[in-house]
Image (cartoon, one colour):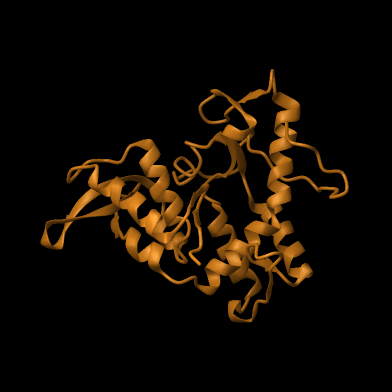
Length: 244
């Protein structure tokens, strides 16, 4: 049975569909051209799945261009704010087997789903007018389903996970997972789950942004917590709100 593959907010029915999507992006540009905002978003979503995403991002990704490599073939090239560049292969990334870090990151993301959901609900409760709020980046009005909770630089989600692993000296080969009805990985150790939730609460600088801006701007080099950043409050799981 073929398994669906999810990259950021996009879910592909098969791995082949994901490969076709990124190949189409690559072939829709000439050498030296810069990706538009939507296509840049898709590349950055894929980059976020890389086990060494912190090294790939470096000081921050300014743009992605189409480069000419061996035998006049095309490749995505990451261009950082310090001028350094690096080729990025979508085929190697999509075809790569899940690493221990990837599995752990997925389980950590599951651990904070209720936290992120409540941040979004609280924002809507405070700021919505006629079922819409302003995107914190573009100031455009948008509906609940058109928005995501974005991890602002420098602490993208993968970097938070990477630092948590390093800080706690975790051996990812020994992490145990549980699965509910064939769902995604979840941390079996509830203490570890709660430790990560607390660490994420302390480190994450969050924004409510339109889905087409999510990640695309989060990879830009920004520093320090800002006044309009959203943070995670302690949540009473017995008192969850309903989405508007």
